[in-house]
Image (cartoon, helix red, strand yellow):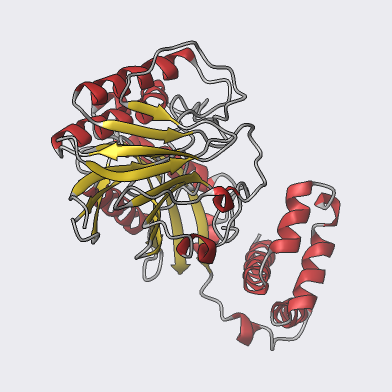
Length: 427
C-alpha cells in the first residue's frame, strides 16, 4: 500500500513557438498566437496550485527550438519557481525540439525542480505536499535533436517506492505523422513494471493503455490547423491502492478548428452565406470566450458546385466571411477564417454520364475504371503529375497515398473536367 497523491502530466509546451506562415494575418491575431503558448503554460501553473497537486511531470519539448530564446527560458524559470514556492515538485525532460545540445542560458533552478539529463536514466523521489514518499520518477533527456535509440529499454525500476512513473519523449509503435525519435513498442512499456508512462512527442491526446497507464497528454496549445480542438494536460489522482483516475483539462489560449458546411439542397448564394455564418457563430459560442482560427470545408453535392470552382470565387467568399465576422481588434473572442477548402461535388451522376457517346463519356469511363483499380489509379496520377514528380513531397505523396484517396482525387478531377467542358459548351 502506498499513499494517495495527485500529479499533472503535460508535454510539448513549445514555449516561444514562432507560428510560421502568419505574415498575412492581422497583427492582433499574430501577436495573440505568439503569446498563446505562454498563456497556456500560465494556466497550467494556476491549475497545479488550484488543484493542490503534489508534483508536475513535463514530458519534453519545453521549448520550441534547440537554441531556446532567453524570453522562453526566463518565463519557464519564473513559472517553475512559483510552483516550487507552493511546495509543488516539477520533473522534466528535454525532447527533440529542445535537446541538451542546444544553447542554454546559465540560470538557477529551484530545489524542487529536477530536469533529467541525457546519458543514463535517473530515478528521483516524488513526495506528497505533506512530505510522504509517493513515487519514484524516472527520466532521460535527449542529448541531440534526432535520437533513434529505443530509450525505453534503459528504464529499470528501483525498490523503495510504492509507485513508479517513467517520463519519456518518444514515438510508440511508429505513430504516423511524427518523427520516429526514441522509437519503442507499446508491449515493451506495458511489460516494464512501471505503473505510469508519462509520454511526450505526439501532439494528440491518447491513452494507449490502462493499468499500466501509457499516456500522451498532447500539447498545451495548438500550433497549426493540423492541431485542432481542446489542448491541455491530465490531472492524475492515484489512490493508496494504486488505482488511477484521470481528468483532462483544456488549457489552450487560442483554438484551431475545422468545420464542414454542406452545399446540399441550396441553390442561392444567400443560402450558403447563411449556413456559413450559422456554423461560425456556433463555433464562437462553443469556444468558451476564446479566439478561434478556423478552416472551413465546403462539402456535399449541390447546384453551387460549378460556381465555387470559378477562378477567385473561393477567395472572394473568404474575404467576405472575414468582413462579416468583423476585425479581430474589435473583440477578444474573435474568429479568424484561415481558409476555405472546396470539397463539393456536382449534381451530375458520373456513372450515368459515362454511358454517353463522345469525348466526355469516354473520359469518364476511363476515369471511373482507373479509380476502381489501385495500380491503374496510381499510374494515372503519376502520368498527370509527371512534371511535378521531381518535387520530393509530391513523390512521397504518390508513394504513400491510399487507393481510396487516389480514387477520390480522380473522381474530383473528372467532376472538374465536366464543369470546364460544359462551361466551354455554353460560352
